[in-house]
Structures are given as C-alpha cells and as structure tokens.
Image 1 (cartoon, rainbow, N blue to C red):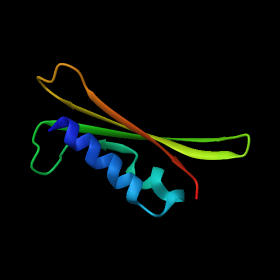
Image 2: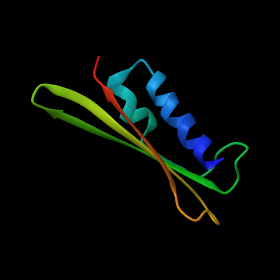
Image 3: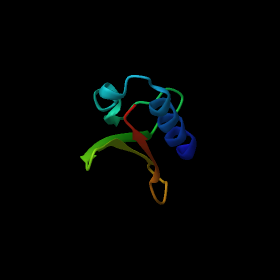
Image 4: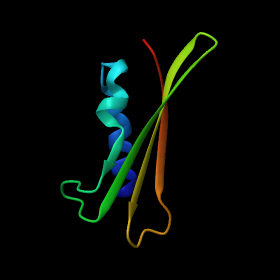
Length: 80
C-alpha cells in the first residue's frame, strides 16, 4: 500500500498540466489519506534553474507505524 500511495502521488503530479503551480499544489504532508489509516505521505518539490535548465524534482515519502523503512519515489519534471 505504501508503494502504491507514493506511485499514485508521483503520477498525479506528472499529469498536472500547470507546471508553475506544482509546488503550491502538492508540496506538504498528508496525515489523513482516505482508505489508508495510519499512513503519512510527504511530498517535496525542489525547483532547479541552472545553465538554462528549469526543472522540478518531486519526491514522495510514505511512512506508517510498523513499516521498517519509508518508501520513496522521485521524478524530475522539466519545464514546458
């Protein structure tokens, strides 16, 4: 379930067509996830602008009590 929650969030961010608002829309911590009691999902959005490149690194961490290690998934999204 933790892997699926991370993958779902990464996919949701990838499909969002408004690049300039991804950080505002998705960065944050969710402590209540429908149908997944006890799970916590943290999404970070780190912008990088260097050498003419503009991209975001999106990282999702999912934890739950009893889960040995957090689950991480990341994706790099380039500006359109």
